[in-house]
Length: 424
Image (cartoon, rainbow, N blue to C red):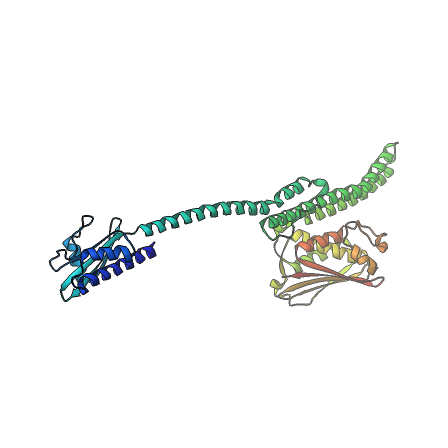
């Protein structure tokens, strides 16, 4: 729009110069001849009016027009400024101050820019049409891309509806896209991983509990039924009660192990981690096991300066950490010859804590070491020893939560060394 106005003002300026030249430079040029030349040889401007004013602001050479009139203030301003562009409603004009041998004059030419208006109207219509077309194109393109983007949602909804407790291992297809829907599907898959893990824990607990609890309960019920079949002596009843007591102790030990295993597999364990000194818990566990097995001895070796207790501190659940150490130390004494001496070593640095137990027991075959962490698994050489195979599976689970690692080195008939490492 500004360019169109500028072009029209430039055209009016040329007209004023032409008018001044014709009437002032060419002395005696008739006004009627000027009008003939203008109409024949010059571009016609709608409503064009040309005026020349002398120093008294009186029109010269061309008679005053009925279409327009200019006040003295405008004429004087043009004379002082020597060039002036102005606009009066739809009419645009240019005035110049022209010096000549006949005198000094103000020349004003004004007209209505019909062509400019037409160009502006055409431009407006073009922009409006382009705007409407762009809205339509954007709408169609947006609808197309939205449909493409949301296309996986019905498929994902269908997959979600097909997931139940019987197929929790099913996962949503994230596809090859790297967008919000794929991220949502991946997040949902992670949630399914947690659900499946929790559900598997419950299933394993129920299966393990039902399998392992059946034997001692069957034994207790059988002994009671036999005792009740006929009247028995005091000594016979005492023997039955002692037998039931032993089975009850085994049952208590088994239930305690299962509950500890279930607690270790619970995600809530992450919420109860507090600073714990590993060396103190390990020594307490060793003292408890020494009392359990009279005649056994546990030798504690500090490989680091135990005066700096901060090196042995990690975030942990103390009861389960204590249970972890008691399981390892208990295994070391249980599978060793009578009245053994067990070496318990503790080492710590700024980045790691090491706890290790060494025995001279029956050892474990290399082919069986990878299976010893499975619940209720027992090595062939250990079947004659009392136990249920829960301890090391509990240890493995607790260490996975505490970001610890376990390493077992064993030689059959020559003993076993179990090492646990905690990162800080």
